[in-house]
Image 1: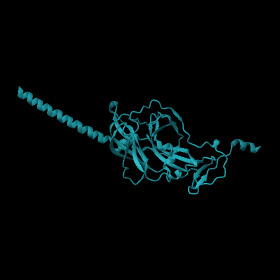
Image 2 (image 1 turned 135 degrees about the vertical axis):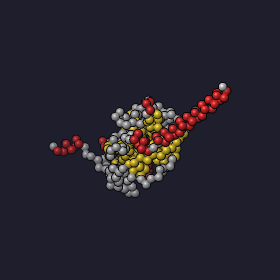
Image 3 (image 1 turned 180 degrees about the vertical axis):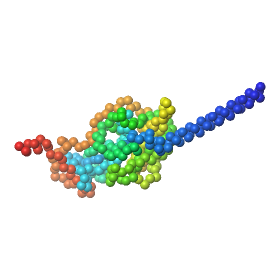
Length: 308
């Protein structure tokens, strides 16, 4: 009887050990499968956007508006955003694109920057997309280093946000343009996924990361992790945003412990207020920057009056 009991206990232990090992291997294989680029691309298709921010400069004394180098715009920058149920999540740099322009810093004491036009392009593998005009409305409440733009559209493919601190095993999603978007705004934008893990908590909200090996032009990216939900379904949650800071790529993860309950959206000026622009005054343009005066539209009422 003792021998039978001993044999049974050994056999049972072997079965449990074998089950645990197989279960562990299965979990690891599943995690690896979830990190495959094609899986991630399909899950995020239509959720990631590229934001193009144009800006002009306005003379602080005269109110005269300038572009640069013969253009009506002083410059523009591209940023990556994510559609969530709270709105489009973008980096802090996206609402102040001039901070990435060394030429603006040379005239900052005399000129104020103004976002003059915002464009957006949804990244989709199913259909070819273009940039279209997209006025921004910014949230009053947002995590440090991040902004929430516009209300979400319930018909969109939305990504949930992960607010729990832990070791995150997921994917760095890089957006890469094969051609410079300034020269070809319809250029193909591809996604490059890199498996990575980070210990994310309220004390660690930024990580310096290496850029992927690629011959294209890196626009930025996001970090997402897979989550199991009811019915055996899997979703990817947004953990952080990839931003460029002083020529270095960083992963910014400020969502841990943040409450998104109060998210009042207010109007954010994205175009110049032409009614407040003063009459052009005599001034010396900055020859080094090659400022280009922007002609302001004439008053419609005055136009009607002159016809009589």
